[in-house]
Length: 276
Length: 276
Image (cartoon, rainbow over the protein chains, first blue to last red):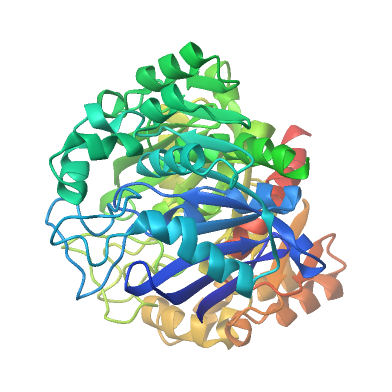
């Protein structure tokens, strides 16, 4: 693992690190915020998965998470959204290929050799974090924005023992029924849509639910509401009687200004679950 | 004035606007955060002046100001750091020309036709803000980072009736004695260093002081300490018996992670002065 930068932030350290990922078969970069409490012991870990076009950097610099993570004593990891590099397949569209991994293990060419973001988040990166940093890996929670909200929900619903709580900002909630989903799941997993269903949080909610607390925030003025389909997830939550808070926030759009406005609520929500 | 974007943020609105500046003889872009309280009446205004290479955008997206401005009921304006555009002079160096206006009125070619950032901040932009937004222009304060800290201090010290309080993050504190200053003041104002003295906050502090409260934060691990010269300003403050708080913050560098870590303190500091 290589340290690219470390900056003091709210009494803790905002670091950026690069490491070799076995799953993605390339070097990967991530941000990790360690709160001041990590100087004297292990701290719980919140995953923040980012959306289309983002790298590890966007939320790390624009979401204002460090203020609240420091107050709560929670570490926050900001992974990249796809494999990258000259040997890695890509597409000219902003919503396919590099920057658009969709948190799945691709089975189709040209994506299969590197696009294994599910395994990267579920296996590779946690092993590295546990080995290198003062993190209590028995206390993990997960959140994300847009494509990253999709990733957070699908990972939490599929790995029920891994995360104590899950939340999402404007998640791609029903990708099997959206142009943000059908295109990418088709490209990465093939045209048989049966393989897509394991990556649709509305379907997973209907089938499985989640044992811990769940929080979703969605801007009512989000310019991508037709692609996100929050109504499908809200329906599935209510139909299952899943304990959850689903908030439609008047006036907010899809930007980081929306994410930052509710970051404190999400970190406090997870911190409570992680303290228990 | 043209609205480029408006995003809901912490219950208020983060806007970006473009207007024709008479002082700079070109179009200028600025960010303005209006807190929720501006929906029902006029609110006080805090100026945030940015540093070298920045536009209106950097602090607006990375400094986390909106959270605290909303809580305090204070608007924050984020001006650009220089005139810009194809007809505007520039230099290949990052620290001269576009992105490096140094908050002075240039008298030398090729800078004189557009580089009038002092008048832009002191006259042009306040007139526009007063006309277009629900701001109480009798209640203004000012802060800034690096070159913007220099601008905030020199403006506040020179226009004593304009700002109720002044603060700075890692300001260029003694530019007449620094390579961040001598180069730019020479280029913009000419080689006679007598003209530079009006733009050195250490000299202004020695001569004039400031009637209101003053707060300066400086990272002890700042990579530019030799250029910033905080010791000169600290000496001048103490020698004058100027009421002030000057904090050397252990472990912090020059980045926005430093700025964000202490933004709450600065906004709360100004909010108290603006309430009085």
